[in-house]
View: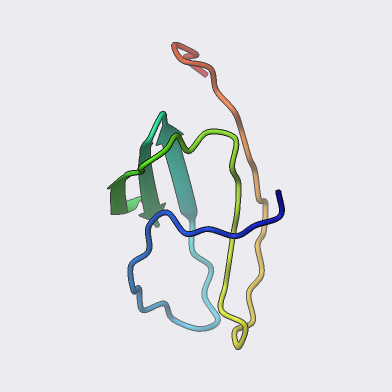
Length: 79
C-alpha cells in the first residue's frame, strides 16, 4: 500500500564508516530486532507483522545495505 508505519523503534548510537549486521524476525505479532546479534527490540504488535518489509534511515544520513536478504519461512520450516 506504499504507506510507512513504525512498529517499534529505539535509539541506537552507531559508528560511522563501519558495517553492522542487522536481522529482524517475525512470528505472528511478535517482532525481534538484532544488531550484530544483540537483541535490541522485542515487541508485540497490535496486528500481525507478516507480509510487511521495510528498511528506513533518516533523511540526513548516508546509508548502504550490502547483501540484503529477505526470506519467508513457514511455521515448522527447519531451514
